[in-house]
Amino acid sequence: LPLCNGVMVTTREHTGETPCGMTFSGLAGTCGGGVQTPGFMGMGRRYLCSAKFIPADGGLARVVWMPKELKEFLGQDLVDAAVAAGLGADFVEKIADETVGTDEEAILPFLEEKQHPALAMDPMM
Image (cartoon, rainbow, N blue to C red; front, side, top):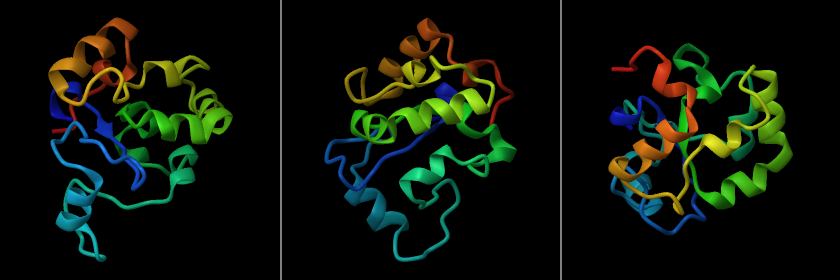
């Protein structure tokens, strides 16, 4: 999400639209089937809590949007990963979800209000 200086994560269970304007099915049709597509990455849910999750781009601190269901599924593991990354126990509350919005114009004010760390990082693009 270029305006938000971060990345979004979704799951196959999330049936709604994502901030990039596509559903999971649309995304899978674009970059699924083992095709390497710049800007897209397929991974397991728990990989998000790994120190190996996009470390060159800032790791977990770059995540600015994910479905509420994924936040709940990862629960304490996500909080623990945030603490281990030095982001604090409240970091998960700074990640927007579909209840905040599904476009950057709705998400960015939320991130600014919560002082999401991605906003202070060097631009990805």
